[in-house]
Image 1 (cartoon, rainbow, N blue to C red):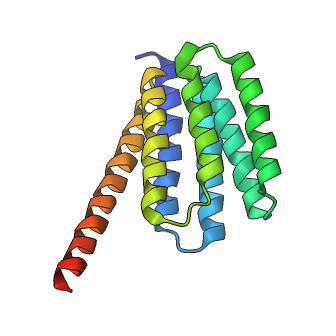
Image 2: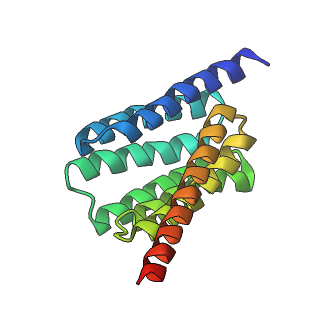
Length: 173
């Protein structure tokens, strides 16, 4: 393994640990701060590993989180942020069709992140994380890909448990 690959994956591992850490926090502001640190580390990892599209999409995600924290993330801002990050990503994409996966994941997420239905939100996470899993694997961000996969599995398990509990409630009535 070359040094760049090791360093990029080490930074991605640190970012992934912040993702896990945000999962145990209870206050929304603390969660968003941990996620912002995670995103900054992912941007660095993407740049180290040559994942320019991922770095651009993660930058848009960081801006999205900051705007959300300020309560400024309204539809016109979502559209502008998606358009700007898309134009930049398309212009700078050096990864072919795979380079569009983070862009697509970010666009889908930003417009559907306000879903109130937990099941639909979990499906959104599964879909977007699957795009990131493919992308991270192809840019050799194996630590990110591992955590992407774990996130997908965790959300599938929760969906199955939710359905099983729903079936139990229906059968008990």
